[in-house]
Image (cartoon, rainbow, N blue to C red; front, top):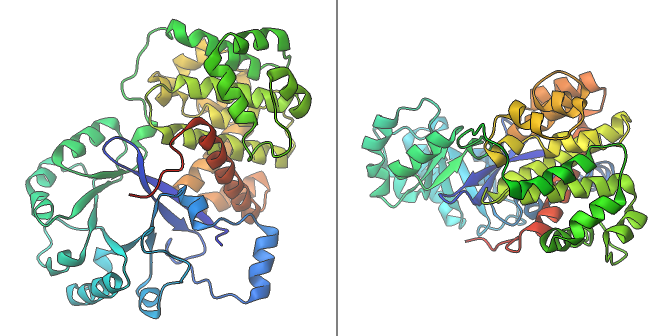
Amino acid sequence: MFAFVARQPILDKEKSVFAYELLFRDGKNNYYPHLERDESTNKLIAKRYQTLDLDDISCNKKSFINFQSETLFNGLPKSLDPENVVVELAANSHKSDSLIELCKHVKNLGYKIALDGYQLDSKSQDYLKFVDMVKINTHQGDYDKLASNVHQLIDKNVQLIADKVETQESFNIYKDIGFDYFQGYFFSRPESVSQGHLPTSKLTLVELMGASSSESFDIESINSVVEHDVGLSYMLLRFINNPMINKRYKITSLRHALNYMGEVEIKKFIALLALTNLSDDKPIELIHLSLVRAKFCDLVGIEKNIGNNPPTAFLVGLFSLIDALLDQDMKLLLDKLPLIDEVKDALCGSQNDLSLYLLLVKAFESGNWLKVIRLSKILEIDQKLLHSLFNEAILWGNGVRNSISPHFPESKP
């Protein structure tokens, strides 16, 4: 259904994904787009670009969607399920009376309402009786004001969403204040940076990372490592037999996989094995974000024909959050890992082609469409094609996540 869309996770107190907010490039200011196209146009878009259904985008979680007032009053598409969609309304775009009428209308349609941009010192609050959640911009960090005022919302059984939470410290503060959900990329930052050595239990995984980033590939040594670790063997076979990756043959061993998939693809999966086993108790969304980045950077690298042995573009995306996974400084961490210099340079912020791929996928994540357009021109890739590649990466990430999480997809609460 959708060809040009991004998503941002909304996490709960346990750092599990509660929902995704959807950002639409072909809608006004990221609002739900006007989709009344003729049948031929819809077919053309579907043929040219990878399109996503709502459940593909939101991984079967709830979707927070901004709608223009006209769209709401004219009737929402029947394809949207009130059980799965939360209507997000901008508090500062309506006068109090009109906001009340709009809230009543949306509630009558059966949807829950999240009020965006709510001001704690707002004089009129009559509309709160119709609101299920309020989203508060925490970017200014006025903790005392928040702490002394949120009780008025909690007392009305309104759930609180802290928006623009960018650090672990902020997450902990807002959690203690009483917020229920959190939006922002705090989970992709190291919690407390350690300068120490990697634990002995991680040494095998570091060895596997080296294999994925080397031009040569020693099948015997890698096979020995994997065969002696039951967990790695199991996960490797789950990865490779995932329908998103392999729809035809049942793969039974690393050697079998190498013959079927080829050296480059096996290197990617070796890197995946290492990364997912490094994650320990980190949020699954951190791995999921790494997966989407890896596939997107890989697809862009294929478009640019940069060569893929070793799969440098894939590795840059996959390891772009490794500092958060291991709670270590990126530069010091990479000094310990056997990655090639081109990958290390991109991950540390030096400018090369790979770093541009990383900037591009981050622009998609934040719905920064102007930056997407600018980088598409620099890379000389059609921006609409880039949207299609990003959608493909989302689908691929969903499929691989299915392999590593026995609880995915979860039913919506």
